[in-house]
Amino acid sequence: ILNVEQSPQSLHVQEGDSTNFTCSFPSSNFYALHWYRWETAKSPEALFVMTLNGDEKKKGRISATLNTKEGYSYLYIKGSQPEDSATYLCAFVTNYGGSQGNLIFGKGTKLSVKP
Amino acid sequence: DAMVIQNPRYQVTQFGKPVTLSCSQTLNHNVMYWYQQKSSQAPKLLFHYYDKDFNNEADTPDNFQSRRPNTSFCFLDIRSPGLGDAAMYLCATSREGQFNIQYFGAGTRLSVL
Image 1 (cartoon, rainbow over the protein chains, first blue to last red):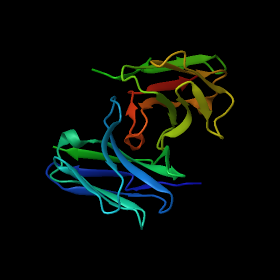
Image 2: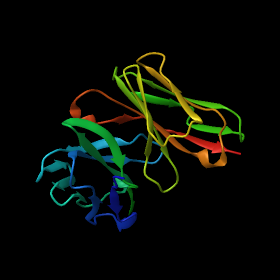
Image 3: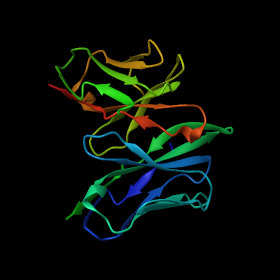
């Protein structure tokens, strides 16, 4: 059974704090790693799709890194704002004979940013 | 504008009473997915359609069925809901390539009384 672990489960920070969370995934049969942001009452939205070991992606104050050899990805938020409050999901995409498999999600990290 | 729309947003049903959740998309994507997410758990894939081909996950209960009458619409039917089926149900779409990036609806939260 393929397992994707995210930590911490929840995080409460003050506005302006920088924060980071972790996604651990199997180090074999890697195809891609996705990060999604899911705000309450909205649709989960893709933040990053990461495919290569050593990938670093950035979108505004949010960035992510990928280590496929050891099976982890970090998501960083610099200077958190209340609008960053959301659940951040990572999803591992398996490699089935060179083709993409389905997404295997972690439980998410719920971030609350207090003004 | 919403590209993947789920209706209703909230659904209350009685134990054993069949219920249907719907999903529509304007993206013209060929793959559609249904996920179940129970409280504090990871979203779990129930099944997906690759065009008209239906793919059931091995551990999806027989109680759950799906229909995809055309590219735009997909339905999740729960034949006899139990208390354990109360969850958030997410619909998503994707197209070939793009490393399986998925586009989600806002979900339907199902309560079973």
